[in-house]
Image (cartoon, rainbow, N blue to C red):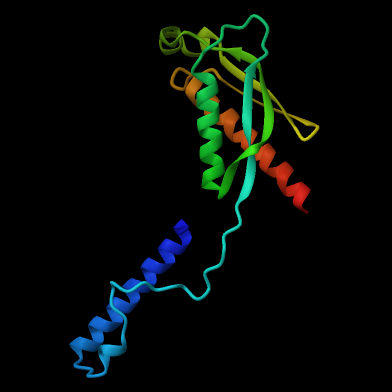
Amino acid sequence: MTIQNFLITSVLVLCQTFVAANAIAEGDEDSSNLSTPNEIVEAPFATEVVSVKVPKLNIHWDCGDCEINDKVIPLIEKTYNSEASLNNYVLSEEDTAEVAITDFRQRHPAKRALFGIMAGKDRLGVKINYKGKEYLANDYSANAWFGMNSLCESVAKATYKQIAASLNQQSN
């Protein structure tokens, strides 16, 4: 049972329970034909849900001699997967988008907090190859409050948007 079917069924059961309770409270003698909350109710308009899929990401480092942070790839994947889920997309097991981290610079958190913009800026840039097309997503932060986690989220959301737009163009 999908989440949509579960929610629809739950709402229908609650409505039927409310109608039955009102009928009993008003003394309606013919309330025996009303369903009870323990009965399974099938929504008449429930149909099979078709899942739209986005490719999973195959992320690797390609930024030359940059200092690699092992937390970056999982943060990008987590946010990408969350964005897909929020937009009713399912992650494909067969289809893959190649993502190369081409630009990465992270300020030391203490320097970032103490000196803010004077400590430079954090940068994250990726090159996305999907179905023969190349896309870019990048962002930077020079403030003292937001670090690499927010950049990973921003770049992952941009990656999702570009891939989703590509899928929408292909389906039209």
